[in-house]
Image 1: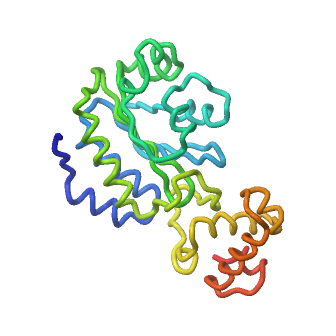
Image 2: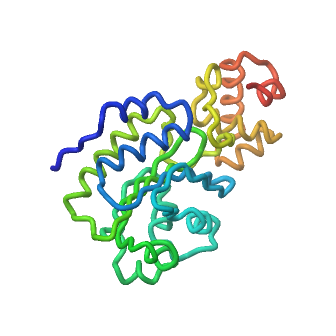
Length: 248
């Protein structure tokens, strides 16, 4: 297996990042060392609002920003990599030529409208989650095909990144926690003590939903929701729904 060399300074930036943006910027610098290429980008995508924020791009390459949004909203059916990720909804690392045939890829809008004009023939990409319920999309594109042996370093970096990222939730699915503005610091203090499920329920409490409604939305019993709400009260040190909803 090829060695994966990432500078200690980059790993330290990933570990100590206090925002999604800081994590994205450090992660794409790591990708540049692991997967040599011609173009790089880091995109933070919010699946709740279908908003994509580009935090880093090289040579004007903005892969998947609009197309990934359209794929998530069901309006685009020919973005093969976005479709694969959205169907599984879990962290993953992919190399286009290993997943999608040249014939299928060359028919896609993302290739003809974004990659082909810039002579990008193959892409390596990694998807992971942040605790603010956004997807971090790291992409490396180049004019020549990635070799099979280059997939192992990408996978290894992806595993390391997932283990080091301070905001990576325990859940391996898209969760409904409250939206956090781009670049904002992830909630600390008492809010940081909540579990992924408790953040999910707190979001719906803030939306004014009752236990029965939350249970229907999440597919759990109202009694289970009630127990989670009680745990949220205890962790935040509040006694009412209103106090929990406005807790900062």
